[in-house]
Every structure is written in structure tokens, then in C-alpha cells.
Length: 219
Image 1 (cartoon, rainbow, N blue to C red):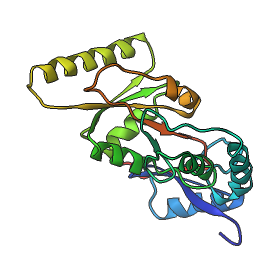
Image 2 (image 1 turned 90 degrees about the horizontal axis):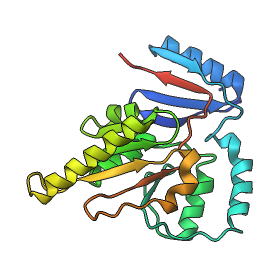
Image 3 (image 1 turned 30 degrees about the vertical axis):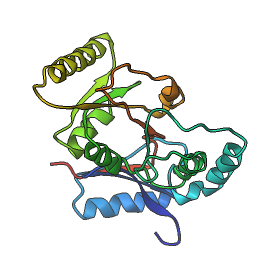
Image 4 (image 1 turned 135 degrees about the vertical axis):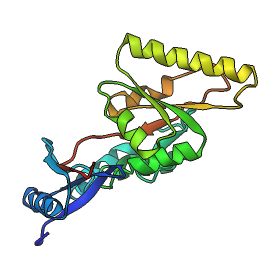
């Protein structure tokens, strides 16, 4: 890095990693990736080196602000992208929130952990549909759908209704569902509710597509 910072900051999928840091160092990282066989190296238009150690001052200010805020344990399990784990203690939740500012987003690990917890269906809520394809690339067995309009929302509801009918008929055993919450909707997660004991919701905090460079090694 020639005395500058360049770090892996988003582990989006097995063949897609985002790096961030000083602009010149990121450019050298792009060139190095291409020379070593990367299929694509695309610079992303962002305003800061998010999730890198260069964001430490911002993380400190965020931690100070969070100390003044009362945090309740969420009723819906939230998988933090800092460590791909859930937390049931306010102090731990604070650390996960400010820690994500200057630490990598472990998206691949989050999806893997959820699949290991029994999640079978993934619904992406909010603008865009970036996460659903990534989910399939991380775990091919997961069923994923981006809820982007009335048609896809109805499709998701029909899928859930069919699963409930199947479980009531003791045909396929138990199944679980997951709702991914992009950063834009993160503040609403405490208001989500689904009245069915057979369907489980999990959220992901701090999802961010912001970074300097995405390296894609796709076929």
C-alpha cells in the first residue's frame, strides 16, 4: 500500500469482495487484482472509505452518541454484520453498531450463519435487489426473493401461505423465513411483526453497498 491504507471491507459473496482506503492505494489494488486474474475491478462512486480503519474517528463519534441512547433488546433476532452473530445485551448492540463503521461487512458469514440456524427463505425488503442474487451465490439452497413491487410482495405472501399449509399437513416438517433489512429500513425493524409461530424473522443491521472498489471473480 506504499504507506497508505487499502483493506477488504465487504465480503459480499465468495467471488465478490470490496476494498476501501486511500484513493491511490485503492487504484493500485485494482491494478493488482486485474494482474492476478480478477474478471472485473470496478471503482464505486462513494464519498468515503466506509468500513475501513480510516473511519475510526467516525466510529468513535458514533460510539459516543450511542452512549446517550437507550437501547432495548430487539424482539426479532438481529444478525450483526460486524461478527455475523446476534446479541441480547444493549452494550453488545452498541459495539456492533459503531464497530461496523470501521470494520468489514461480513455478509457471506451472515448468510451462512442464518442458513445454519434453519432459515430456508429470504425476502429482501426495501429499494433495490442487490442482496437476493448474492444470497443465492452464498448458499444455493436458500430461496431468495426481492420484494420490489406489488407483484413480488404478493408472490412472497403466497409462498409463505403455501409453506404454512404444508407444515399444517405435516408434509415437509418445519421451515423458517428471513427478512433482510437494508440500512434504509433498519430503523423500522422493531415494528415488524408476523403472527405465525412457524415463521421466523431475522434482521441484518448496517447493510451497506458503499465502498471504493468491487472485485468480481465471476465466471
